[in-house]
Image (cartoon, rainbow, N blue to C red):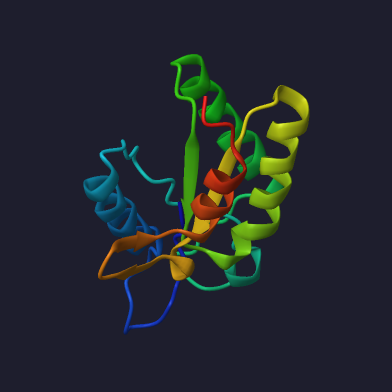
Length: 137
């Protein structure tokens, strides 16, 4: 997920494009699925720039919750949200806590600027924290 907002003539309008590419690269290494990115997010502070599309934090929270509920209903056991927009982080942290508390469903989010590659492959900080705590069964 990312945003559609004005970044200037040097950059495309949607930072979700870079985030989608990172998710696709991760999926090639892990064999996981990638669903289409959400190109809109909370960008209220850029609303006055032409081309910016912003969602309220409440709508963003509800939208992503419902997407996760659909995937959960389709028997997806683990979901990692790739985020390309810093403005989404507070809402996503709140969402992840709500999912864990209300439906006991573990979802992680990873910001695209925290993903790195090295000689041994991809490094996702949230996944390494998750795998060190989860039950192997």
